[in-house]
Length: 105
Image (cartoon, rainbow, N blue to C red; front, side):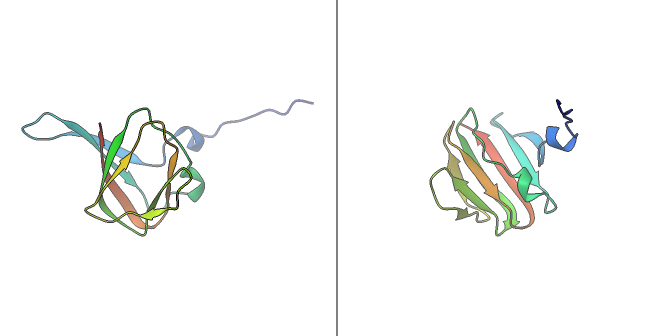
């Protein structure tokens, strides 16, 4: 017997909120993305992006970034991290909200 499948609204949404911003004077765009401290660990999945990115950490404690086949690194406020296009990576939940600025390069 074939079982019916259902898709919840939660599974169709991203585990973050974001706003698109424009840098004054340059016209360059970037995204400010916030991962709420209540995000479920299972929602922070391995994934790939179609463009390379620079990620600048604005706030958050004990959050980590893990690239494929590498150990996780602590995300430090004020530091920038590079994510090459099409490389698998994921976030590991920390404390408080994680707020990052993302620039596609």
